[in-house]
Length: 440
Image (cartoon, rainbow, N blue to C red; front, side):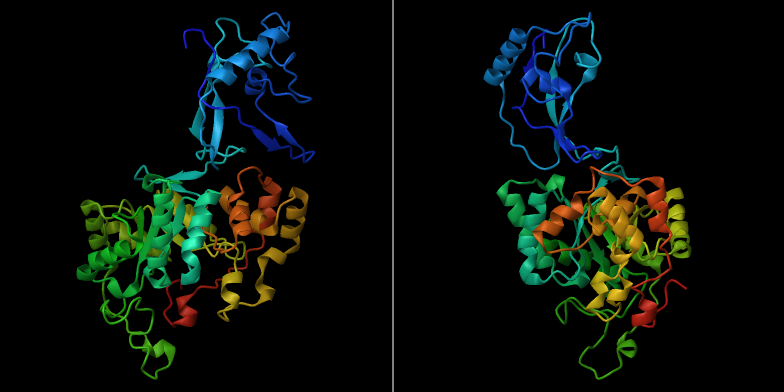
């Protein structure tokens, strides 16, 4: 300001990995020059040059570095932060700037774009931003939830995907509360999704179900509330059994598919009640899950608020390009679950290890060439298709691995190889395990 050099943060190592050499390099020569960073690329006696091509005197750079060291303001650095230097008002070492020289270095939350220009959020039609990478809470044991949520927040996760049917929202809520109390993150920075279960589709039950979820998660509002399935089942009171699950009365000695009692509640009725939740401020956005194109068309005929998200099964064995195109044309963001395919279904007897997409030759070869894991290759494939993901894990190193997708990219040819694995293999199909076809 006033032609003075000013910094609003302490010196930080702005480094990245060079994909060609694998070496970590400093990538902002302006900050390097004015903080006296020394390496083979940024010698402080050479990194800054004047308009005539001559180098700034080394003594000047040392004085500038000393000034910045004295005047710097400490900033609590955390995952997702980046340092931005506005080159419009900065003399860049490789692009000499003529005129008054200013350096206005500032810190900003850098989760709007990654190192490859890939946005880290999708902007919904409501204007809200949903993180492209979240943590799915399905099948995470209750006793692990609180720690997993804390570990995830520390690793940089801000999106948590929940549901009444997962049976662990109380424990997830404890983790969220702990994270908020710790000061690591604020509620405004989190994106919390939950889902309306099948037994609460009647208009008189929707609000009650939402309030139960909010109580369990210890929240005042949800960022996103989804209709879990386009299936309406007979109401089960919360005090009788929660979560209700699929069977109307699990104690009856009936075949599983015969224990499911459906009721004729129109999706339009359920959706109108969901819209009221938005008006009341209990949820910010509403959407659906497991809806096909026909169901979406029918819903949008009467919807006052169009669904902002459709969450469906997506992985290289089930690419669903037509559904993605339809949703994109209609302003509906796609979130994929079961992003890696079979792993979550093996223990349920709904898949075998032979179904693992991570063992596919092309995935393994791409991973090796990129110095990444096969899982990271598949997850990056999802992001480059424009869909968000919610991979599940309880392991700290996997949490970091699954969100570490923003410093590499797949080529067009690599994307096509992964997409070519499509065999229309659906693992989570009510038409198979519950004899309720919704995709046919």
